[in-house]
Image 1: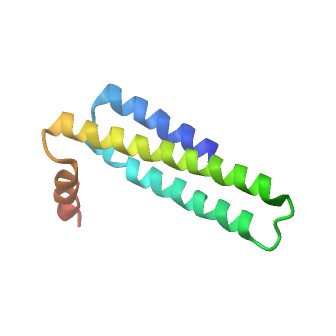
Image 2: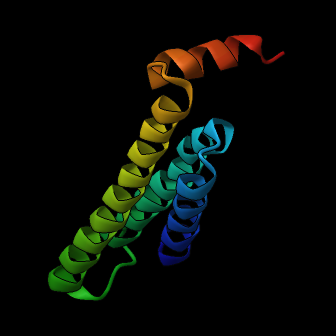
Length: 102
């Protein structure tokens, strides 16, 4: 999750510099990776093989949640960049782009 967080924040920094709405739109995909890692973390700490106790499970669950929120904030940076670059509502712009893709 740490590596995924570094990747998405690096992408956010690059998008803030370039103001490229297409690059900004890709944050949702990076966030999907983080969301999957978050689900895997929960499966691990809630699994029958977990032997490290409740305290460690809670600490890891909270840490995972912070990473997941971090990625969510990067998605918001992307959406705001789309608005700044296009002047359009990000959801509308994204929907229009998806309808153009084959």
